Length: 275
Length: 319
Image (cartoon, rainbow over all chains, first blue to last red; front, side):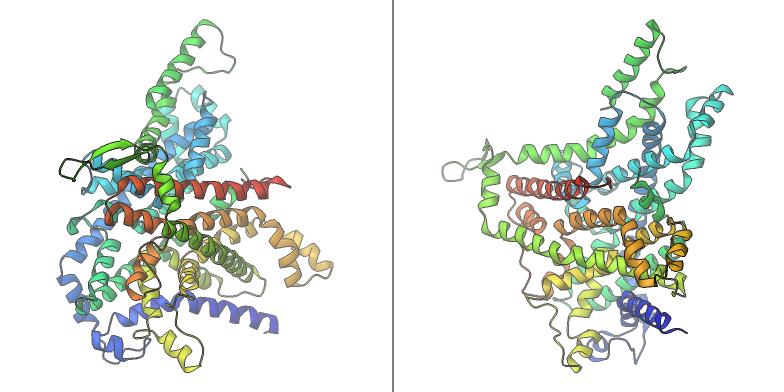
């Protein structure tokens, strides 16, 4: 190997070590008792008791529920967001109408507003409408994805030829059918990206469920783990639960990410900048 | 919003009936509204309305009259809440703190993701798939969990990192007041550098290989190719990464909230978002909280648009 190859590989391995360290630490820690967690070296478990920790974790009942809730909020929200973005983005790309650019500028401004800024105002207006504390209060805000509309429009513009739509019209297809059969099919790589983005965004959003929910049975897993973590100072037994819960949910996401990695078209977002 | 669109759709149709439309539109335009309305109705309800409502609330305050025995009354106060927020030393300090945090985090993020992308794209790199996945993994770990994990790695009792640094005689108090911002910056970089790297790598893959060939023929080494060809070509995605990191840092909330119980270096007004949260739920003053939330949004907007204007002024536009 040439020296420059060794340097590049050494740097890459050092970076991999950095990115994997917390994940490895939590997987090791999940096999420890509370005593060993404090008393032994962080990356080695002398008396592994993974089974016992896991059965305690799922024995709480509420943890499995939090995982299911997270999947419901993120899955349903991202699905709806993808559908709304696909229709709006497609129409804004393929039909000229008055006010189109003004609406698109509004969407672009929306891209720059992060979800944290919205959480508190959304809580205020939902509490006025009596919606706080419900499943809907966390699900509904997730169906709006300005970034999804932006991406769908850019992609539809670039990938769907007008001539194709024109020939479908000549063949007598209606606009809805053209969208459902041609538009959605051609846009599918962008739609997968929109879905994944929104899924991760909802799954990771903490501020919104934090202000909306008070019933633990409706918590997503992030909120639940933060709750347990805040109780460790009262009762150290919660530490074991927090660590095991963090390990399980991190592993769950890591597996999802690894398996979906090839669908992840970061290139779509990069290319869209030039648009 | 839907009403407006439907009116517009019908309006164009009616106008088209009288004269021959310039553009060949053979069908009624109602379908445009059907496609566009669901998103914009949701956008109006869950995006614009909350912002409008918060701005509205920010102009009022509750005043209790007399001995506080009667119901407090809602009173218009104009910009009074904004004056109160900006006159509050703790809140202005929190703004200064996130600006300082941006100065640490934005360069760290840009340098890290660029370095990772260039290393991975280098002709010398191997095991690319393994490295891509391991750098990208943290993006899927929620901020709460990332903060919990790094929290355990910062606390001396559970951390192998602190053990190792202490053994080597290096500074290892991550949760001290002087180290807390870099410690939080580390969590954010850990989470998002791999994702930003993917965006940059995708940008590099669009570069025609002949460009590198030509440079090699001219005798340029890998480092010179990286610095003189690759980096300038990544201008647009680098600007994008800078803007989104900037916006993210100004919103700082989860990381300090989770780390707070572990250290005295974080108070309940540590960042503007924490201060607004504390105002709404700790002090139950939703009017002041609304003003603070509005100020945070304005700040994020002014800074991100200001930055885009600055970089777009000369040369080609990136956005």
